[in-house]
Length: 464
Image (cartoon, rainbow, N blue to C red; front, top):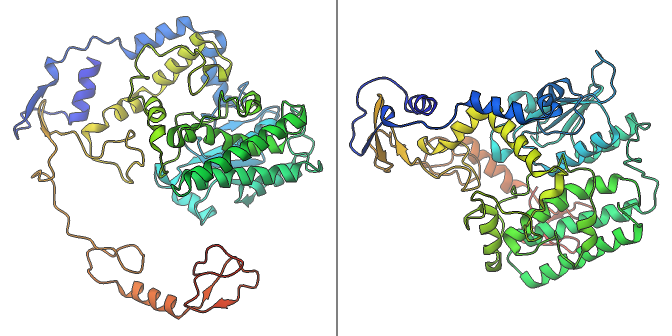
C-alpha cells in the first residue's frame, strides 16, 4: 500500500477520471511487493553496530567521532552549555572547495563551530538573511565573536589568530615555514592551469602538457618533504589548501579531458598523499559543468554517468581499475552498505519525491546537469483516483502560453514583456557610455582611450 499511497499523493488524490486521452493508470491496480520502510528499518537495526545505531544522536549532540556533512554543530571538547564562538556558513551540498578548506582547518584544529547551510547558485536561491550578511552572495562566510568574515583565506587566518593553541594533528598553519609561500603559489598555479584547460578547447595539447608538468612539480614537492604531507610528517595549511582542488581535478579531468590523477604512475605520490579529509571530501561523481570535453573522454564520462551500465547492480568490485578507489573511507563493504541504507531510510520521503521528478514541471532555476532533472515533464496528470497520463506536448491545453519576452540590450534583467529597454536600463547604458574605460590590471588605473582594447600590463581589459 505504500507505493499506492505515494502515487495517490503525487497525482493529487480525489475521485473521477483525469480524462484527456493517453494511458489511464489506476493506483488500485498496482501491486506493491516492496517491504515497508518500517520493516527495512527494523532489519537495519538488527544488523547495525552500537556506534551505527547512535549515529543520529551523536550527530545531534555535536560530539560525533568524525566529521560529517550532515552536522549542524561540532563541539569537540567544548564544555556543556557553552556556545561555540564561530559559525560557518557553507554550501548545503558540501561541495564548494572554498568552504571545504575552511571546514578542514576547523576539523584539524578541533575548533568548536556551528554550521548554517545555504545553497550554491546552481542549486537554488539563497535566503534573504544570508544576503543581509553577505551582499555578494559568495560562500564561505564566518562569524567569529560577532565579526563577519567573508573570504575563505581571511577566515583561516582569523581562526589561527583566535585559536593559536589548538594543534590536533600538528599545527595546521605553520606560516613561519619558508616553504609555505612557494607551495601556496604552486597550488594557485596548478588551479589556474586546470581551470583554464577545463573551460577551453584552444591549444589543447599545450594546455595538457603544461598541466601535467605542474602535476610533476607537485609530486616532486611531496617527495622532497619526506611525506606523507607537503611539509613532512604533520598536516599543514598547505595540505588544507591543496586537498579540495586536487579532489575536483581528480573528478573532472577524466570526465572532460581523459586524464586520471588517481592510480597514475606519472605522479604516484599524489595518490599516496592522504590528508585526513576523507570524511569531509565531496562525492567523486560531483563535478563542475560548462567545460570543454575531448572525444577521448567519452568512455570515462559514460562510466561516471553510469550510461555504460557501470551503475548496474551488483556494483563491480575494486580490482584496481575503478576511477575512484573504494577503500578511501577506510570502511568495509558491509559497513558501507549499512551506512547507505541508514541515509536512504532517514531521507526516504525526499528521495521518493526526487525519484518521481519526471511527473512535475522543470525546476526553477533549472538544473545545470541533465541527469539531475529532465528538461520537461515526462507525463502530466489530471485529478482523480484513476489518472490519465499524456505525453508532454508543448501545445498542451492545460498550459497558459506566456507572452514573448525580449532581453534588455543593456544586459540588465528584462522588464516584463517590453520590447524596448526600460527607462532605468536606458539611463544605465547612457552612464556607461559616458565613463572612460579603465584597465583593471594597470597599477595606475589610468583612463584609456575608448578605441584601446589592451594595455602593456594586461592580457585582457574590461570596463569598470
